[in-house]
Length: 150
Image (cartoon, rainbow, N blue to C red):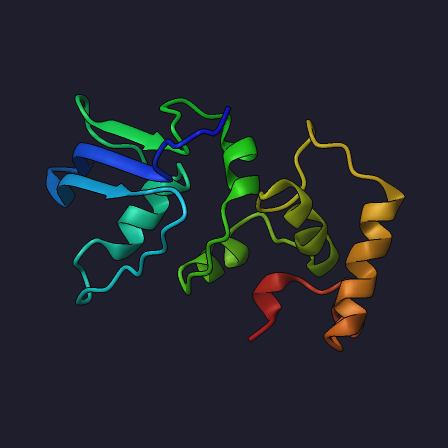
């Protein structure tokens, strides 16, 4: 059976920060197999939309948010399916507690910021991560804090 659910289906989405509405989106659907670009002026809600999709933010009551056809997700499972690149992600890596470079790379296996107690990683994951750092000439950064990098 082929799942023809849209990649993303949003309706009545409103995200609030304190008393301010930072995203008001009546409807957005991205069908399976399609691509989309998010364009807009500063402050128009692009990063908020990405954070909503990644489940870093949640909408006000009454919204319908379906990602890959599901309205409920374990965020770690969902993030493994997403490929998000954003300049605001750098802020996550500079946050407390400090995140070491190798831990950051290994945490990519779990689509998380850093390694959590419930995540079990293997020596193979560490070896692949060290090799990946070597491939991009960054192996010498192992042991440094992500916040110390430009």
